[in-house]
Image (cartoon, one colour):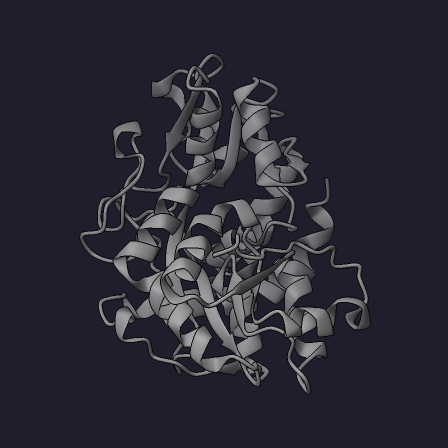
Length: 338
């Protein structure tokens, strides 16, 4: 069998240029996750099912706009989002198909759409990372809200809202603490010299290099940095774990079947595969994410990574976060520009 066809196309291409070609190539996945992070799972799915997968990667919002533009004649079959927010928006616009996979029965309800139109497949935790050459372990910040303290002036970095988990993080704070508190918090960070970079990769590199002492990012960037350089002086904190504190937000990679897609059967099989132990393990291990299923193997445990149930999770659902993401972008987008 020839090597499966995987394509990653620039989103600036016109619909007429790439749309019919993709549709002719079989089952099409629109993915906000990078190709290298899901390649192993796609390769195994193709080998086991003989279903050819064509992959188009891009930013979640850009892919969602394509799905909406194409709604009369969908070119894609399945959407993989980096958080539930964009996927939930597609659901509310009636652009997704409900499918309750038998493989999702043990998944916590908060990681499923109310009507079955999307499902979480892996999770990521919002954490604090720090440079251990600049910050002693005992002195590392234990709360997101400690970072407005003058001791961290000019020492903190975060990714822009081009990263969906930056948006989701602020949406979680707003859901739990209100809009006024969230606005004061962001202003406090900015007044304290917060530096905004383009993405989470830049954040973890800047902290590892000692350009900044502390960063807010997702837990797996800590593991990616250690894989790239095991000697990196980088530490990780699961924040706000004390009594009365909000806990660390958790977000899920989501899978959703596009309404009107030409390959409904293949899309359902792929969702099943991503939720089954064999496929899900490849995603967890390939992306350094945490499993959402009870008892699944956790990657990075020896490095201090914690799974669901091992840390205090922020008591906010994926839908609650999704409800507030667009408002967060309108209110604070101009403040979080690189």
